[in-house]
Amino acid sequence: MSTSLPALLELLAGDLSPGGVVSGADISERHHSDWTRQGPCPPLAVLRPRTTEEVSRVLRRCNAVSQPVVVQGGLTGLAGGATPRPGEIALSLERLVGIEEVDTSGGTMRVLAGTPLGVVQDTAERHGLQFPLDLGARGSCSIGGNISTNAGGNRVIRYGMTRALVLGLEAVLADGTVVSSLNAMLKNNAGYDLKQLFVGTEGTLGVVTRAVLRLYPLPGERLTAFVATDSFEALVKLLAAARATLGGQLSSFEVMWSDYYEYALEQLAVSNRPFGVRHPHYALIEVEALDPAHDTERLGDFLARLLGEGVAADAVLARSLDEAARLWRVRDAAGELIPRLPNPVAYDISLPIAAMPDYVERITREGAALLRGRPAFIFGHLGDGNLHVISSLHSYADLAAYDGIVYGALAGIGSVSAEHGIGVLKRKWLGLSRQPDEIALMRSLKAALDPRGILNPGRVI
Ligand code: ZN
Image (cartoon, rainbow, N blue to C red; front, side):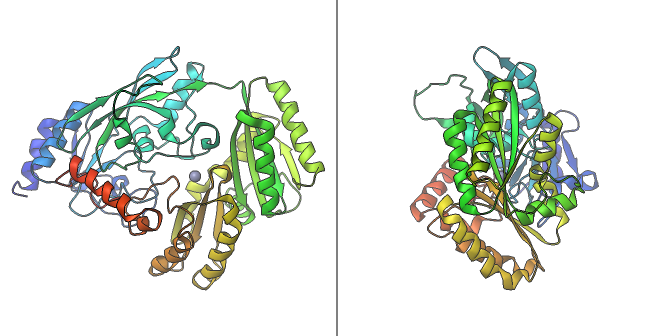
């Protein structure tokens, strides 16, 4: 790079509105890492554009001098993708916020990428609609980050991943070109669906700046049931029965193994337990009620039948929003509980439901010597074939060996990332889930869209 950093920052400051460049001691520690807190590193500077035009100008400038850039949204990622690496400038979208339009007849919303997911959800609800993407980090994560990582969350079983909720996008390429593909139509087969280049590619092919999102009708009420089972087989039967009986109204089927559940209760100081005794598995079931009174009765009948058949060992139906929130709190707390563990590691894997019991048994057995009594908490989205494993290592020196156990057991059957993405932390395991020709095609796309490799270098591929 021929331009010195102070000279480059001065030029960048001229490209941005006031307060657009933060450098040196003024950079908040928040920008040093994502939620994993692994390998924190201060960026050379933080750029804070207010408009797409400003994003375009600073990328053109950085590209001209091959200055690497790490893109940052709400910094709630769990794959290290937004954590700066030495020599990178952070491009933060925290000032690129706002809802531009809500079309209630078409069921769409146009938003700027830095807008927090919670704001998108609340705005949709104020218009009598819902944006169904939902995850524990809703208050902090940004919609641009959700799109870049193709976030999943709690309602994938009903509405699909973020990809299914994005109709159009605007993105800025590494050289500053603005690609505006702000389609708001449900059907549009006119040529390549370019927005998919930027959904789930973790900011390696372009920076998402705007999106047109798909909204759905707001249900009359969300009903929550909490069910215990005494075996994994019963849990799978419960899922099948819920799908068959509750159909399209089933919006969540979240599961927790008892070790996670007990740890969360203890950490959150929850005293009133719904059940008297401990069970090996728990499921949180959410139903979107159209007619709350009728659907509550139907869900109650469903639970009574499964209790009668011995599939459910115990069950409760939340009688108020408050009760439902208390039940969800334990599941939602996962993100905040991770940093409370010494040397935490979090996994996000995908595999066929039928393979789960053997998989869990295998990583428990093979991991025992490394964990030596430390926990391996398991919970996740059973209906999506997606489990999360959270462990606490004695030392990060054991990380590669433990990764090898958790990922190695997936070879040939599953994916090393179901919903969090590859980032930096899972890059060396990508080959377990993707064929060499697939990775070669990913590299071709990267070379075509970002020939100088300035956007999120070292992430994904
Ligand atoms: Zn998840």
